Image 1 (cartoon, rainbow, N blue to C red):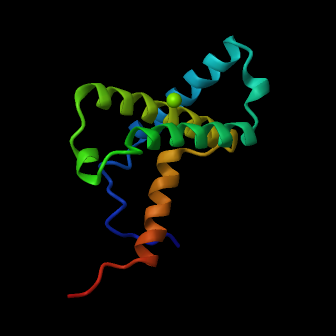
Image 2 (tube, rainbow, N blue to C red):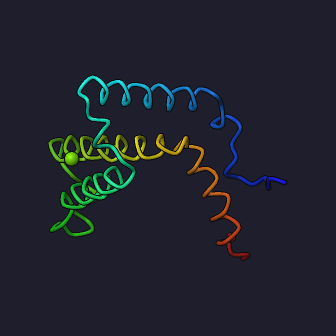
Length: 122
Ligand SMILES: [Mg+2]
């Protein structure tokens, strides 16, 4: 039986998010098929590409102080957005290989995390 907790917000847990993820997965499949890139998109290669994109995102902050990383300029924000996009693309493609919806995976993991790390009682 599924446990209920604060992370299962019925307003966010609508089919609209699932439809958006499906549309993104379909668009990514089409993009790859049109370029005949599917041959390169094994789960191993997608996982490696994902880790590279995460590293590119981390590189933006590499030499900033913690405080500097909180207040970046617009050009830096644009760069962050591009890398977040790359990360999302590879994560979505990797999940798609296993028929997974990344948003559902995140929600399910938050339920597990809430059980593992309960809010401390005051
Ligand atoms: Mg990139």
